[in-house]
Image (cartoon, rainbow, N blue to C red; front, side):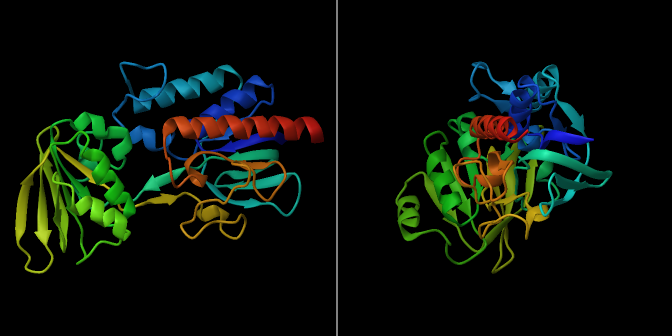
Length: 305
Protein backbone atom coordinates (compact mmCIF):
# COMPACT_ATOMS: atom_id res chain seq x y z
CA UNK A 1 0.00 0.00 0.00
CA UNK A 2 1.25 3.45 -0.91
CA UNK A 3 0.23 6.24 1.50
CA UNK A 4 -1.10 9.54 0.19
CA UNK A 5 0.68 11.50 2.91
CA UNK A 6 2.84 10.43 5.82
CA UNK A 7 3.49 12.85 8.67
CA UNK A 8 6.60 12.23 10.76
CA UNK A 9 6.26 13.71 14.24
CA UNK A 10 3.55 14.10 16.86
CA UNK A 11 3.81 17.59 18.29
CA UNK A 12 1.60 20.60 17.47
CA UNK A 13 2.93 20.73 13.89
CA UNK A 14 2.35 17.05 13.17
CA UNK A 15 -1.10 16.88 14.75
CA UNK A 16 -2.27 20.07 13.02
CA UNK A 17 -1.06 18.70 9.70
CA UNK A 18 -2.96 15.49 10.49
CA UNK A 19 -6.15 17.45 11.14
CA UNK A 20 -5.93 19.30 7.83
CA UNK A 21 -4.86 16.31 5.73
CA UNK A 22 -7.54 14.14 7.33
CA UNK A 23 -10.24 16.72 6.76
CA UNK A 24 -9.21 16.87 3.10
CA UNK A 25 -9.82 13.12 2.84
CA UNK A 26 -6.19 12.05 2.34
CA UNK A 27 -6.28 9.37 5.06
CA UNK A 28 -2.96 10.53 6.57
CA UNK A 29 -0.59 8.23 8.41
CA UNK A 30 1.14 9.91 11.33
CA UNK A 31 4.32 8.33 12.68
CA UNK A 32 4.39 9.41 16.30
CA UNK A 33 7.87 8.34 17.30
CA UNK A 34 8.41 6.48 20.54
CA UNK A 35 7.08 9.37 22.67
CA UNK A 36 3.92 11.16 21.56
CA UNK A 37 3.46 14.90 22.02
CA UNK A 38 6.90 16.46 21.69
CA UNK A 39 8.20 19.14 24.04
CA UNK A 40 4.73 19.99 25.36
CA UNK A 41 4.69 16.66 27.16
CA UNK A 42 7.30 18.23 29.48
CA UNK A 43 5.29 21.42 30.01
CA UNK A 44 2.94 21.91 32.93
CA UNK A 45 0.47 24.74 32.31
CA UNK A 46 0.17 26.32 28.85
CA UNK A 47 -1.39 29.78 29.20
CA UNK A 48 -0.70 31.30 25.79
CA UNK A 49 -2.46 28.88 23.43
CA UNK A 50 -5.61 30.49 21.96
CA UNK A 51 -9.02 29.39 23.29
CA UNK A 52 -7.65 28.34 26.70
CA UNK A 53 -7.77 31.54 28.78
CA UNK A 54 -7.44 29.59 32.03
CA UNK A 55 -4.56 27.54 30.65
CA UNK A 56 -4.29 23.87 29.80
CA UNK A 57 -1.75 21.23 30.77
CA UNK A 58 0.72 20.50 27.97
CA UNK A 59 0.00 16.75 27.83
CA UNK A 60 -3.75 17.41 27.80
CA UNK A 61 -3.37 19.84 24.90
CA UNK A 62 -1.47 17.18 22.96
CA UNK A 63 -4.12 14.56 23.76
CA UNK A 64 -6.82 16.88 22.43
CA UNK A 65 -4.87 17.57 19.25
CA UNK A 66 -4.38 13.85 18.66
CA UNK A 67 -8.08 13.16 19.24
CA UNK A 68 -8.94 15.98 16.84
CA UNK A 69 -6.71 14.49 14.12
CA UNK A 70 -8.15 11.02 14.78
CA UNK A 71 -11.69 12.38 14.36
CA UNK A 72 -10.86 13.36 10.77
CA UNK A 73 -9.33 10.03 9.89
CA UNK A 74 -5.67 10.32 10.81
CA UNK A 75 -4.02 6.99 11.61
CA UNK A 76 -1.17 6.65 14.08
CA UNK A 77 1.88 4.42 14.07
CA UNK A 78 4.35 4.25 16.95
CA UNK A 79 7.71 3.83 15.25
CA UNK A 80 11.16 5.38 15.02
CA UNK A 81 12.21 6.70 11.60
CA UNK A 82 15.81 5.80 10.81
CA UNK A 83 16.07 7.12 7.28
CA UNK A 84 14.29 8.28 4.13
CA UNK A 85 14.90 7.26 0.51
CA UNK A 86 14.30 10.22 -1.78
CA UNK A 87 16.01 8.57 -4.77
CA UNK A 88 12.89 6.82 -6.03
CA UNK A 89 9.24 7.82 -6.15
CA UNK A 90 7.02 7.14 -4.29
CA UNK A 91 9.38 7.99 -1.45
CA UNK A 92 10.30 5.40 1.15
CA UNK A 93 10.42 5.96 4.91
CA UNK A 94 12.63 3.46 6.70
CA UNK A 95 11.32 2.68 10.17
CA UNK A 96 12.20 0.25 12.90
CA UNK A 97 9.20 -1.92 12.03
CA UNK A 98 9.48 -1.75 8.25
CA UNK A 99 9.36 0.49 5.18
CA UNK A 100 6.51 2.86 4.33
CA UNK A 101 5.96 4.02 0.75
CA UNK A 102 4.37 7.44 0.41
CA UNK A 103 3.42 9.95 -2.30
CA UNK A 104 4.03 12.96 -0.04
CA UNK A 105 5.30 13.63 3.45
CA UNK A 106 5.50 16.27 6.15
CA UNK A 107 8.56 16.18 8.41
CA UNK A 108 7.61 17.58 11.82
CA UNK A 109 10.09 15.92 14.16
CA UNK A 110 10.74 19.08 16.20
CA UNK A 111 13.76 19.81 18.35
CA UNK A 112 14.89 18.70 21.77
CA UNK A 113 16.12 21.04 24.48
CA UNK A 114 19.68 20.45 25.60
CA UNK A 115 19.67 19.75 29.34
CA UNK A 116 22.50 19.89 31.87
CA UNK A 117 22.38 16.16 32.53
CA UNK A 118 22.48 16.41 36.31
CA UNK A 119 20.48 13.71 38.16
CA UNK A 120 17.88 15.99 39.81
CA UNK A 121 17.19 18.17 36.77
CA UNK A 122 14.41 16.24 35.04
CA UNK A 123 12.65 15.59 38.34
CA UNK A 124 11.70 19.28 38.45
CA UNK A 125 10.84 19.88 34.79
CA UNK A 126 7.47 21.62 34.89
CA UNK A 127 7.93 22.24 38.60
CA UNK A 128 10.39 25.10 38.40
CA UNK A 129 12.82 23.85 35.75
CA UNK A 130 12.17 25.04 32.19
CA UNK A 131 13.91 25.40 28.84
CA UNK A 132 11.54 28.08 27.52
CA UNK A 133 11.59 31.50 29.17
CA UNK A 134 9.12 33.01 26.71
CA UNK A 135 6.68 30.21 27.56
CA UNK A 136 7.02 30.10 31.34
CA UNK A 137 8.32 33.48 32.55
CA UNK A 138 4.88 34.72 33.71
CA UNK A 139 4.76 31.87 36.25
CA UNK A 140 7.75 33.44 38.06
CA UNK A 141 6.42 36.87 38.93
CA UNK A 142 8.25 38.26 41.93
CA UNK A 143 10.47 35.18 42.24
CA UNK A 144 14.22 34.57 42.12
CA UNK A 145 15.44 32.50 39.18
CA UNK A 146 18.65 31.15 37.67
CA UNK A 147 19.48 31.04 33.95
CA UNK A 148 22.17 28.58 32.83
CA UNK A 149 24.03 29.47 29.65
CA UNK A 150 26.31 32.03 28.06
CA UNK A 151 25.10 32.59 24.51
CA UNK A 152 22.64 35.04 23.00
CA UNK A 153 19.70 32.80 23.93
CA UNK A 154 20.69 32.92 27.60
CA UNK A 155 21.01 36.70 27.43
CA UNK A 156 17.64 37.09 25.71
CA UNK A 157 15.97 34.77 28.22
CA UNK A 158 17.50 36.63 31.15
CA UNK A 159 16.38 40.02 29.89
CA UNK A 160 12.88 38.71 29.19
CA UNK A 161 12.68 37.18 32.67
CA UNK A 162 13.45 40.53 34.32
CA UNK A 163 9.98 41.67 33.25
CA UNK A 164 8.52 39.17 35.70
CA UNK A 165 11.13 37.82 38.13
CA UNK A 166 12.42 39.60 41.21
CA UNK A 167 16.00 38.67 40.34
CA UNK A 168 17.88 36.72 37.67
CA UNK A 169 21.25 35.03 38.20
CA UNK A 170 23.14 33.86 35.12
CA UNK A 171 25.40 30.85 35.70
CA UNK A 172 28.05 30.11 33.05
CA UNK A 173 30.93 27.64 33.02
CA UNK A 174 33.44 29.85 31.21
CA UNK A 175 35.37 33.01 32.06
CA UNK A 176 33.33 35.06 29.61
CA UNK A 177 30.06 34.88 27.71
CA UNK A 178 29.79 33.66 24.12
CA UNK A 179 26.97 36.14 23.45
CA UNK A 180 27.31 39.18 21.22
CA UNK A 181 28.70 42.32 22.85
CA UNK A 182 25.45 44.25 22.57
CA UNK A 183 23.55 41.47 24.38
CA UNK A 184 26.22 41.28 27.08
CA UNK A 185 26.08 45.04 27.59
CA UNK A 186 22.31 44.94 28.01
CA UNK A 187 22.54 42.11 30.53
CA UNK A 188 25.39 43.57 32.57
CA UNK A 189 23.68 46.96 32.82
CA UNK A 190 20.40 45.50 34.10
CA UNK A 191 20.12 45.94 37.88
CA UNK A 192 17.98 42.81 38.24
CA UNK A 193 20.66 40.53 36.76
CA UNK A 194 23.73 39.14 38.52
CA UNK A 195 26.36 36.87 37.01
CA UNK A 196 28.32 33.85 38.26
CA UNK A 197 31.09 32.94 35.79
CA UNK A 198 33.27 29.81 35.92
CA UNK A 199 30.40 28.16 37.75
CA UNK A 200 27.99 25.31 37.14
CA UNK A 201 24.73 24.07 38.61
CA UNK A 202 25.36 20.62 40.08
CA UNK A 203 22.04 19.95 41.85
CA UNK A 204 18.45 21.13 41.92
CA UNK A 205 16.77 20.95 45.32
CA UNK A 206 13.30 21.37 46.73
CA UNK A 207 10.27 19.61 48.11
CA UNK A 208 7.49 19.50 45.52
CA UNK A 209 8.94 22.38 43.49
CA UNK A 210 12.34 24.02 43.05
CA UNK A 211 13.58 25.66 46.25
CA UNK A 212 17.29 26.12 45.56
CA UNK A 213 20.18 25.10 43.32
CA UNK A 214 23.69 24.05 44.28
CA UNK A 215 26.28 25.99 42.26
CA UNK A 216 29.89 24.84 42.15
CA UNK A 217 32.75 27.22 41.47
CA UNK A 218 34.87 25.44 38.87
CA UNK A 219 38.09 27.18 39.96
CA UNK A 220 38.09 26.46 43.69
CA UNK A 221 35.42 23.77 43.97
CA UNK A 222 33.35 25.68 46.51
CA UNK A 223 29.61 24.99 46.43
CA UNK A 224 27.03 27.71 46.97
CA UNK A 225 23.42 26.86 47.80
CA UNK A 226 21.35 29.53 46.04
CA UNK A 227 17.70 29.91 47.09
CA UNK A 228 15.65 30.22 43.89
CA UNK A 229 12.20 29.22 42.72
CA UNK A 230 13.09 28.56 39.11
CA UNK A 231 15.89 27.44 36.80
CA UNK A 232 15.93 28.10 33.06
CA UNK A 233 18.32 26.03 30.97
CA UNK A 234 19.41 28.03 27.92
CA UNK A 235 22.22 25.99 26.38
CA UNK A 236 20.48 25.42 23.07
CA UNK A 237 18.18 23.01 21.27
CA UNK A 238 19.02 20.07 19.05
CA UNK A 239 16.76 19.60 16.02
CA UNK A 240 15.72 15.99 15.49
CA UNK A 241 17.27 15.70 12.06
CA UNK A 242 19.97 13.03 12.37
CA UNK A 243 18.01 10.78 10.02
CA UNK A 244 18.02 13.56 7.39
CA UNK A 245 21.76 14.19 7.20
CA UNK A 246 22.93 13.88 3.63
CA UNK A 247 19.31 13.83 2.47
CA UNK A 248 18.09 17.42 2.99
CA UNK A 249 20.03 20.69 3.33
CA UNK A 250 20.62 21.50 7.00
CA UNK A 251 22.13 24.62 8.52
CA UNK A 252 25.17 24.58 10.81
CA UNK A 253 22.97 23.81 13.83
CA UNK A 254 21.17 20.96 12.08
CA UNK A 255 17.85 22.67 11.29
CA UNK A 256 16.23 21.93 7.92
CA UNK A 257 16.68 24.78 5.45
CA UNK A 258 13.25 25.40 3.95
CA UNK A 259 12.13 27.64 1.12
CA UNK A 260 8.78 29.41 1.11
CA UNK A 261 8.55 28.46 4.80
CA UNK A 262 7.71 24.77 4.43
CA UNK A 263 9.04 23.51 1.08
CA UNK A 264 12.13 21.32 0.64
CA UNK A 265 14.31 20.37 -2.31
CA UNK A 266 11.93 17.49 -3.15
CA UNK A 267 8.47 17.80 -4.65
CA UNK A 268 5.82 16.64 -2.22
CA UNK A 269 8.15 16.79 0.80
CA UNK A 270 7.49 19.53 3.34
CA UNK A 271 8.68 20.51 6.82
CA UNK A 272 6.76 21.99 9.73
CA UNK A 273 7.44 23.18 13.25
CA UNK A 274 10.65 23.41 15.26
CA UNK A 275 12.58 21.07 12.98
CA UNK A 276 13.00 24.08 10.69
CA UNK A 277 12.49 26.90 13.21
CA UNK A 278 15.45 27.81 15.47
CA UNK A 279 13.90 31.17 16.36
CA UNK A 280 10.31 31.07 17.63
CA UNK A 281 9.81 27.52 18.98
CA UNK A 282 6.22 28.07 20.11
CA UNK A 283 3.30 25.66 19.99
CA UNK A 284 1.18 28.14 18.05
CA UNK A 285 3.87 28.82 15.40
CA UNK A 286 4.48 25.09 15.03
CA UNK A 287 0.76 24.47 14.58
CA UNK A 288 0.61 27.26 12.00
CA UNK A 289 3.42 25.77 9.95
CA UNK A 290 1.72 22.36 10.18
CA UNK A 291 -1.33 23.95 8.58
CA UNK A 292 0.80 25.50 5.82
CA UNK A 293 2.55 22.20 5.08
CA UNK A 294 -0.80 20.39 4.89
CA UNK A 295 -2.16 22.96 2.43
CA UNK A 296 0.94 22.43 0.29
CA UNK A 297 0.31 18.67 0.40
CA UNK A 298 -3.23 19.30 -0.81
CA UNK A 299 -1.96 21.32 -3.77
CA UNK A 300 0.68 18.71 -4.59
CA UNK A 301 -1.67 15.72 -4.46
CA UNK A 302 -4.40 17.49 -6.41
CA UNK A 303 -1.94 18.40 -9.14
CA UNK A 304 -0.03 15.12 -9.38
CA UNK A 305 -2.50 12.45 -8.25
